[in-house]
Amino acid sequence: MPSNKEQFSLNIFDNSPIAYCVLELVLNDEGQPIDCIYRYCNQAFADIKGYRLEKMICT
Image: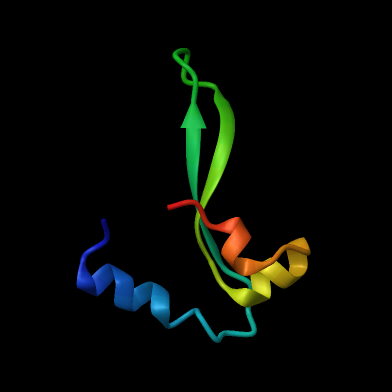
């Protein structure tokens, strides 16, 4: 769970016209990337990807 300071830092991107996201990279037992999870993205990023914002973020 992000601290209040971290959450505030992300909130400044919410209405930005610049696409922004935070990903969690999932690794297998050998350390190889196998998946990624969107932990945060703004509307500009969702628009580029062509998805609804609330469908992109996994909590």
